[in-house]
Length: 81
Ligand SMILES: [Zn+2]
Image (tube, rainbow, N blue to C red; front, side):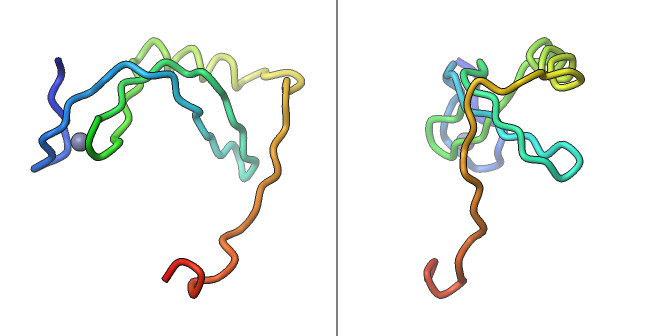
């Protein structure tokens, strides 16, 4: 098991499919079911070089999305307090 790379974090990475969010020239793109390694404690996420390359290749010509999602802004700082 790979230990978390965040200083002082006692967690380790676990294989997990994640929802990856990319900001491409100001446009938000969401890719589901991206294989990643996620820390069980702090949630730090690692993508392998192969996955990063595959995503880059895909994002160069992603075509029509299979689904879409609403995007909102954080309403106000008071709500987070
Ligand atoms: Zn961690």
